[in-house]
Length: 379
Ligand code: HEM
Image 1 (tube, rainbow, N blue to C red):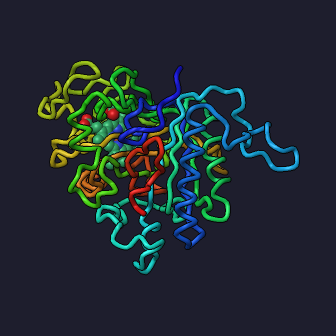
Image 2 (cartoon, rainbow, N blue to C red):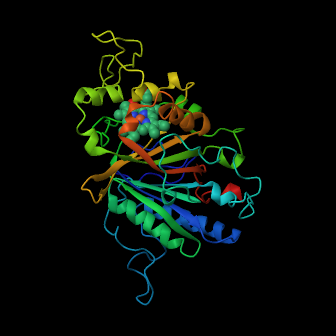
Image 3 (tube, rainbow, N blue to C red):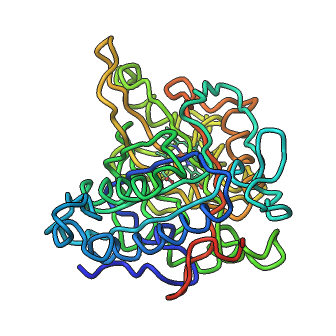
């Protein structure tokens, strides 16, 4: 397979058909120098340009340099194909202002209004060590080694300027972002991504994903806002729920993924339809009802999450869940609106089986030109 182009109007890794693997990292900037930040973004862009095309980092790469110096590339991707690698970066609020709201890096006036901290939702059990970050790197590839290699090398380049706050491996995409892809399953065993925005839905991408002119600062035009949520699942409890109960919680069948109101996977959800018992086929608190645009002032998001298993906890339970990723033009009107509904008065029944433990919001700048670098319009 051909490598995925790195340059373009938008960053790759958003509408790119979701690859199988994720390695995500959030970093804190440890420098206060504007020059350092600019240089870091330039060096990252250069390295990403090479790695996404299947090349080593640096002029001499992993093995062609001086035997007396550490190699420029760490080497574990030597001989591997590019594997659909995309590297997408985002800027956290902390890059623009410090804890007291004072501008950092001379970025006065550049902070988008939309990059404000996400509110706390009911049921959140956020761990500070899994939240925030000044910079985000989302590396996706069909080979986990390639994704890890990408993040590892960017982190290495950042040494002395930024350090990792947290990182997350994901092993199975839970969303399709192209209608050419089959819908994958999440750790609850359900197809996930059926009603997602797809790369083919040009109008939805303009309405819901890409930042247009006039929507906040100019440097974000053609960019998008990234929300990440690390969501733990109480897998063992879920596994004891009868099939019928599991399906009622989601609002779709487990086999085909078709709506409980009838039909196949891609048929429309009918929220008024009643079952043989006279009750609503898709219940009042079913996940797909509460998350649907009809109940969220029309809001849609582009989901691009991954399954994770971080081993098991001391009780022998799987530390598994969904690393939720969503792209959108306006987090308040989209993710926040939907999540408030899911965690709100009606309380999505799914919440008995999941708990949000990590959270992030990042402004992802537009794509880069052949000569350009990530975020250049900021400086
Ligand atoms: C739909 C699972 C969290 C937003 C779905 C579907 C499943 C699912 C199985 C149906 C298939 C589909 O259309 O993709 C989960 C699980 C979650 C989770 C297991 C947590 C572990 C969230 C969160 C949000 C969200 C946090 C956003 C705040 C949506 C949306 C839909 C959806 C917008 C499509 C609804 C529609 O228009 O039909 N989810 N989800 N989900 N989910 Fe989730």
